[in-house]
Every structure is written in structure tokens, then in C-alpha cells.
Amino acid sequence: MAPLATVFVITMRAIAGPENSQPDGRDYDLLVFARADTEAEAERVAFQGLGQLGWIDPQALRSGEITDPDAVPDDLLASFARALEDGCAVIVYDEP
Figure 1 (cartoon, one colour):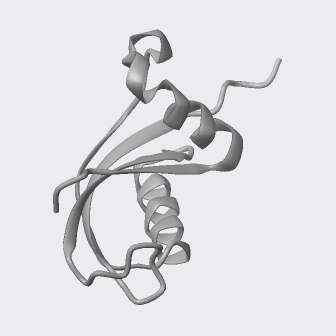
Figure 2 (cartoon, rainbow, N blue to C red; figure 1 turned 90 degrees about the horizontal axis):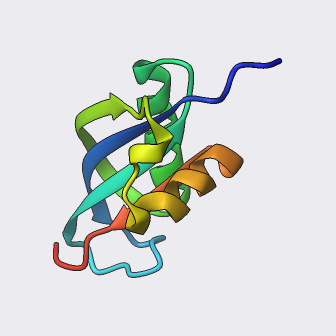
């Protein structure tokens, strides 16, 4: 049996750049779920994912591994599942 994929959650801050879906040039706080084997790899996945979505100047503020998927709050389960499937999921907080 193959080991389950590991997902990390990373609190980040980035600017909505010109290629972003809301290119207002403002700073936003983000919660990024990234599938990876290590914390360093998860941060790399998160930076890459944000770049593809048009976020610029991203900063990783803190990160941690999700060791108990059953403890993920209901409102974050869809993002957790998306990260497992696609490698990365981003939650943008409404207020920058």
C-alpha cells in the first residue's frame, strides 16, 4: 500500500498582480494548501501555484503539516481535498 500524500498549510501574503483574476495591486493574506513530502517542497509548490495565478511578491509567513486530516475544519475540507488532487489550493481572505 502506498503512503498517503502529505498536505501542508502555509500562511502567506502576496500582491494581486496584473495577471491575477482581481488585479488590484493590493496585498492579501492567503492560506495555501500544498501537497508535498517536506515543508520546503510544500513552500516551493505554494510559490509556484501563486505565480501561476498571478500573485506577485509572495511571502511565506508560517507553515505546518496536516497530520490528522479528520481534524481539518469543515470549511477548509474542499481546499484540503483539492490540494490532494491537484497539488495546491489557495484561499484568499476577503480583506487585504
